[in-house]
Amino acid sequence: MAVGKHEAGRGNFTYEDLLHTPDDGKRYEVLEGELVVSLAPKVKHPRIVKRLQRLLMRAEDAGHGEGFPAPLDVVLSPRDVVEPDLLFIAKDRLGMVTEENVQGAPDLVVEVISEGSRHRDAITKRHIYERHGVRFYWLVDPEEETVRVFELKDGAYGDPRVLTPGQELGCALFPGVTQDVGKLFSEP
Image (tube, rainbow, N blue to C red; front, top):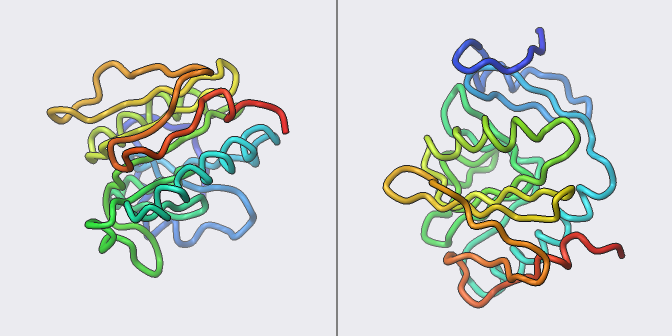
């Protein structure tokens, strides 16, 4: 099985193929039919994910739905199987969660850019999430210390709100549950 560079629409990999990838600790996804592998990120990445996970846990504790960290397959279609850093599903849509994976578009997907994932997260995955109807997409950039908040309106994301330290990150899915953006990027 070859692991190639993503080229839109060119691959023939499916979720069925993904089930046969090695259990080697790497992260495998199928993006528009192309198998993509990601290596483990640097320490700052999981630190930010952990802080965002706390935010989603507060939303969960408030009864708004359920959040999940990677690794968890999200099957958007046979040719689009993603493993976002974090995702959140509103309580009235939790039926899409199976024992094996998530079947369909979560309400919120969070990707934290790591070395080598900038184009994939900012362009390829954003288009995939938009096409499959993910309502909210947060693109977290540790280098710029920003969070780009995309919201699906009339089937498209449009321009994101760009949040910086000192601003509150939250979502209409869980009103009143917020996090200062600066705290995502601060040292322990």
